[in-house]
Structure formats: C-alpha cells, structure tokens
Image (cartoon, rainbow, N blue to C red):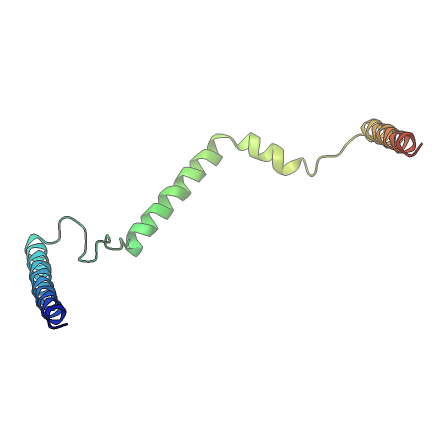
Length: 119
C-alpha cells in the first residue's frame, strides 16, 4: 500500500509540474502575439476574432447596390412597364373549357378504375 501511495504522490507532483509548464507556454504565446499585433488573426482560445463593419462601410455598400439596381431598371424600362401594366394574367374561356374537360376525363378514368377494382 505504501508503494502505491508513493507512486500516486509522484504522479501528482509531475502533474503540477506539467501544469506549470503549460501555463508558462500559454503566457509566452500570448506575449509574442501581443508583440506581433496578433497578425495571425487567432485569439488565445483558437477562434478568429469577430469581424465588424463600420456603419459608413455598410452605407457605402447599400448605396452601391441601390445604384446597381437603378442602372438595371433604367436599361430596360419597357420590360418593367409591360409587367406592371398587364395586371393579372387571365385564361381564355376556351382554355378553361379544355381544362375542365380534361379534369372530367381524368375523374371518369379514376372512377372506372375504382369500379373495376371493386368488382
């Protein structure tokens, strides 16, 4: 039993020494990063810092996008006017009759199949 206690005590001492070494390494890394200005872009915990954009930069991007859309709309005004003035699309009476006839034919086939299966 005394032998196991000695081994356990020795392992705990090695563990403390290893933790001290790790702390020293982390401190050295953070010191070098602070001197370097953290040019690698990686923080101590391994994540990249959050990138933020200034309000002025967002405003510039929004204005540029609005300008692109305005230019695109200016280039083809007749295409835009065609869609705006046409209203909703309507189907002709003949087209409605064809669709209704096709639907009646499909339902007739379904009913015929049901009668065939029941018999």
